[in-house]
Length: 393
Ligand code: ADP
Ligand code: MG
Picture 1 (cartoon, helix red, strand yellow):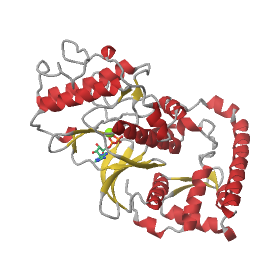
Picture 2 (cartoon, helix red, strand yellow; picture 1 turned 120 degrees about the horizontal axis):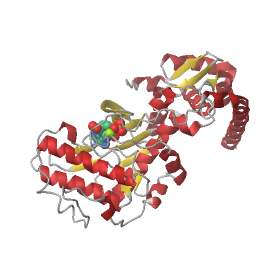
Picture 3 (cartoon, helix red, strand yellow; picture 1 turned 120 degrees about the vertical axis):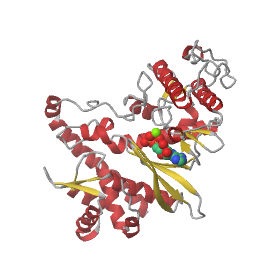
Picture 4 (tube, protein in one colour; picture 1 turned 90 degrees about the vertical axis):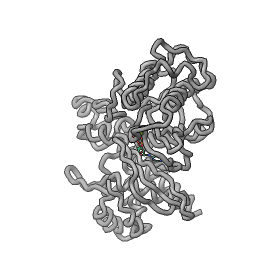
């Protein structure tokens, strides 16, 4: 997706006020009624409508008048809100070229005033599931299941919290710098995804390091769930860095064994194919670990003894709560390898239908939903009024 950040410079305070008003309205509505946006933004002399037109021109909003006059944020609109916040916080001052495109993320270079370049990941989780929702309702009763704003924000928060916690435990991950909405800023890894590497000086060493990481993660109570050649970066000195954490699960997850074996299988498959590694020579000594291996050298999940818990404390410190974890776990991780260890780029796509309830349920609950929407809008307006009063005081 093109991210024309020049537009950012031309946007006024009023523009951001209205953009934020739409974001707030989206807590309760898929399409936010124009009059509600106007009430939330409370610009003088009907200013909201002029601003809405401008935001629409720059594709930061989508207009929908199929049932009533309303707007919703586009990804670009949400990107701008996050970027603006990051710039205000002094995290970076400029956005550069795109360096990665994931199935559900876009990665850009960003730079500080002093020229330090970092990586910014904009999560697009929920893009697919959001479109798959056929709901004719406007009010998001089950909003946590299919609101893309919520899903991508949660994915970013989870990724940030895990990256920070893993870094504190000495794992080779990017340095987690900051997080806002669906956006994570981290250090830029100098290197390439393993998938692009055709030759290695020491494939056995790299292989064993990677296996050791999977085992050590499990010893910390975690499984990556998407551990493959796309999510392992490698530099010119063959130093390994792992990336991409929104789908990680705990070893107490009911499918933990399967996810663990699948991560291991991905690595075996890739190194066998790409570097013709025969596994008899390696992996009997995985990173000083006591873990047992089967006759093919694959570490056995059941023999892993946990040394630490689920890093609860560290994750909570970044604002990632148990509830967030529960919400996100409703979105079953489907990692990038299938059970045969073949790479499937359609990873972590929330299953269609999940959260999208049946038509009959939709219509029977419609009245109740509309009432809830009204009540929640009233709540929203009340809390805004309170905030404003506090700001004036
Ligand atoms: P997705 O969840 O969409 O797969 P990733 O986090 O795997 O997103 O990032 C996609 C690509 O972007 C990676 O394969 C890598 O090339 C690049 N990338 C991601 N994070 C960084 C980083 N910190 N430094 C350098 N490149 C990165
Ligand atoms: Mg990835």
